Image 1 (cartoon, rainbow, N blue to C red):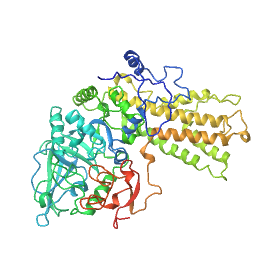
Image 2 (cartoon, rainbow, N blue to C red; image 1 turned 90 degrees about the horizontal axis):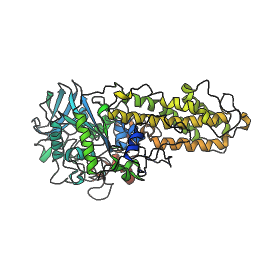
Image 3 (tube, rainbow, N blue to C red; image 1 turned 135 degrees about the horizontal axis):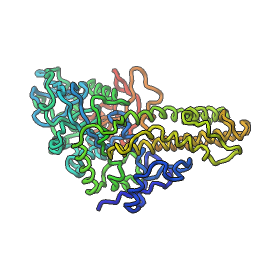
Image 4 (cartoon, helix red, strand yellow; image 1 turned 120 degrees about the horizontal axis):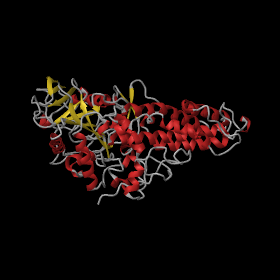
Length: 581
């Protein structure tokens, strides 16, 4: 039975580590509906600097996934996607497909957005070579994007959203059954005019339903082979980006063909696939696909998919997936998705949601990181606490200065009550969205707006509160009730450190995940991506014939420690030989 979408939004946050959640507290349906429609400033506590977000909130998760769309780095880090987003591939976009024969695919097949990705699967005998098809879109192609590492044939959730769309249930035992998955996705999409499906593994790919519709062949070249093709080099290329991972035969239901770890394949070719994927690591990411966020469907939408809330209880975000979703919630998602697929591209509001989200990330990303750095640099015995506190206060003031109303002044006497700064908090939290006409928004846009408002609100709450504490402590150049020499900076610094660490853990932006120190000129920063980090099926590295570097396994230079395959951690790998480090 489908849960009621009841949400208690006024509970304080009881700590946040990678978006762990607790179950919902139930309310009546009527009160739930009223609550979800309330404006931001309807209650007297809304601008209380001490009120944290609800423990049940997923707004920051929706915000972060939206900010990560079509970017390789964050979707490699959190590989279990939660979003279904219609989009288009513009006219004139080139797509690539490598194979072992000269036949144009007659069934749904993969294409790559970068030729390096396709070329790695251009395999045949040394005598015959291989073939690479280049296609061009002759009209806008209608596609559906699965976020996360949705082409990673792994246990644990990367393919969950595709299972839901293709089969309306999770079928983990069909993890390698790419032929049936794509065929069934295309059957579903045919009635909505869907041309293909966008996924990501080492790089981005578009699974085309028909190589003769909406595309023309630009070239069909006979190239030098990158390795043995299927059955020794003569057959077709169902392997490709959609093929099985390393670690042995995928089973009778899987697509046949070479795996990325085929020892006959060129090592340089797969190094370049990973390299080309890194071009799309950060915003704007893969720009050859244009998503329509006005039609986005999210499994983090707790009013649409409440059944997943208890399954995220005490779970770090690495392990959020769709296992446990109810049949009723699947039906609700599919109804919403099919409505979206029948709606014209672009919402009535005209709001560029992607840009709006990144305005906030750009504004606060490096500044919050700087505050955290300064606070983490104050622990040595010789550090000057007062000087350090003033440096932090300067950074905080920079962030609140656009909202520092002349009429807002601190109290005349020292106090722990910072309500005098609430007007600054409110202005900071609403300035990016207060102009938006809510009556023109789609349901998807309302969800995104809510995610922006709550995320920006918590940033502004924490930053304004920290700044107000510094003002009262005499660290600012504004008139204060305390003399600078009496400032309790030594007491303030630990409080600030806790506040900024909690905020950044709650936000959990991938812009803060980077190689430290920076990589050298001959290197680039890398997160372990399927299939280059363990045994077939996504297991951790082991020993024996399926161990790292063994037959049918990825080169050892791409492998991490046993624990890193679940929680990918960045490190530098080489762009050029020698590859092994």
